[in-house]
Length: 94
Image (spheres, rainbow, N blue to C red):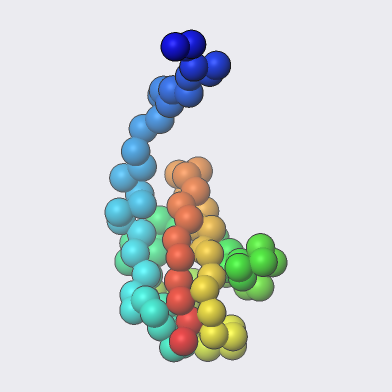
């Protein structure tokens, strides 16, 4: 038996506590997303499943984001936090 050709090891990766803090509800949604801990968010970018940027939001009025103009489907949210961390979330628009 030959040894494996390569060994992959993950080191130095610390779990982000921000992933648990940033929450979107309801999910699925039909128009408005409530964002928990929005005061820690610098920007939220919405990408469709093809990877196209369809919306970006960097000024927040309260803790709701209106996404009623988006088509039904799955979106990936790239959340940039004020502390420099990035969090990726999935949201379904009905």
